[in-house]
Length: 301
Image 1 (cartoon, one colour):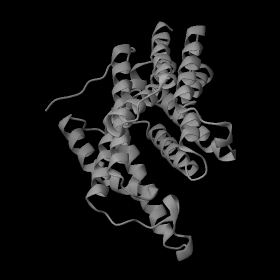
Image 2 (image 1 turned 45 degrees about the vertical axis):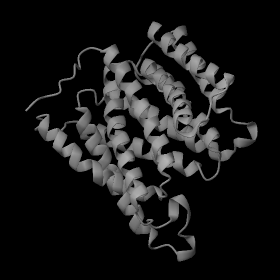
Image 3 (image 1 turned 180 degrees about the vertical axis):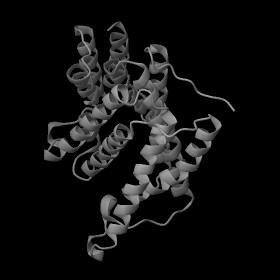
Image 4 (image 1 turned 60 degrees about the vertical axis):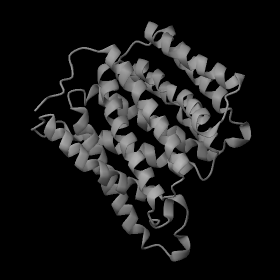
């Protein structure tokens, strides 16, 4: 038996940075591979099958790491899980109604909300370097995504709400779940995904047949090799992402860690080149440089 011991009494900045960079690296790679596999699903099918794959793995890891007691503070763990599930659902609710670039641009306001919530609810003092890092990083994201004004409409509020929920969940992670083991946080999150996905999937059968269509309301699609591969990639990405994000926000100031979340967009550009031959132009390259600069500024803060 071996144990993973995390220092909860003081920040571990190098660990926090490594955890969040690895997290966004893996999540962006997983999304690129899923796009490559071209699996077709409904959202609730993803929630159920992904969590069914992950739960045995998490239970095995919990046993191997020697975690024997149930976590305390179950209210905060449940609240964190609900906020993250809501984040995921709101973001995908927006996609049929706005462009992906507009949704991503709205969602990546999340470091702004994390910084704001840190100041309001955690009492963190955010200096000028911290706010400048967020501004520079968000400007870099906009240079990469380049959404047009016509892409935005009332549905843009959904990914904005998604960003706020994620920011709130990370503040809860920092303030109320800092003593919890990341594997336990991931276990409860996936239990929540499983319950929500199964309940909604069953409810869909009550709808008239003509309404059962689209990413949100269709019944489950048949599973072939590409679909199972996509679900496996999603499960692996969620495992690393959920555990990595928990470790990052438990061990580093949220405003600083949130700035490194911008790196997802930069990695997405790299995977676009590697897998799809999408050569980044000078504007996208400038955006990636600005995201790197935002990370450096946040470290100075």
